[in-house]
Length: 408
Image (cartoon, rainbow, N blue to C red):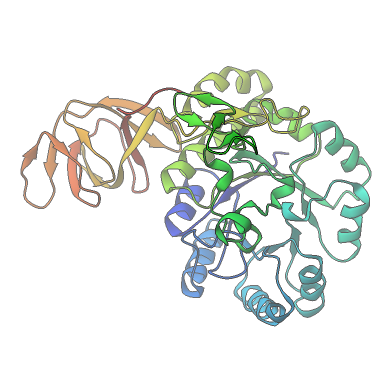
């Protein structure tokens, strides 16, 4: 049986992309009590709509309530959980032990998942949560596959294990970072991280003020603390063998294009694996190229095969192709697009849909409102018509050459 593919939903656009491109479940937050205060998030009204669309496809929505709350915040957190449970969310993520115990007592009908922020590293901790009503633990990122396998063997069969498989990594232990608090006053464990680990740093000696030495440098700058992005696409059989039931993609701050690209690649990989490992291995090179077409830092495999190598120094983002438009409709061979970024008539574009990516040449660009022909378009939100030689549906994406791409 294939594991659940769990995708980030920072808002409705990302949710729809995740569902369309093959996620089995999504996770997202409300404006309060999650750890992504600057994501789009969901109002109560939008959450209701999200649940309708998710459940209409027989998929699941998990709500993030994994902030570390103060005492005076617990009553509101409990009330939020009750309301979410009444609306039909399929589970809630919590990281604080007090919040977990309060929700088990005050909202017993709501399934609870223990967040990676709780840094669960051993079976004793996981069993404590299980015995107090949790049925899933999102494992600490610091665990190797070997340790996960041993932990799985020590737990009840119906205790589910979830683990991150793709996306940004945090340099601190299980995300418990104070750097943003100290440097900016924005608390990472309050959902407000300013990501200072991604800034450029240099070394200065106490008796030599003003003399700075870069610690690790490339053409983009110096990044001492910046972690590499996680990419476990090539190791899905090992993840399954270790007993992980849910494969989690990071990215509630990401665009719908990013979500579609990454979810689509993992969905196709899992479906190929269902056909047989040889089919999966044959498809991997194409899918690895696919992941490089979305914004990413250099990849590694995190802690799954031992300490990350390299441990830090990931220099900025790379992206081999750029999101240029979203398909709204197609009639008589012409696709109606909402423009996202500049492209030109004559560009080689790709149609990205759940079945894969299909290249073609954009022979012409026509403004939808006026019928005027254009050599290029660049205004986000503008609607244009282009000839498209493949069937397409609303929610598919078009991407084109990233003229600023420098590799990575």
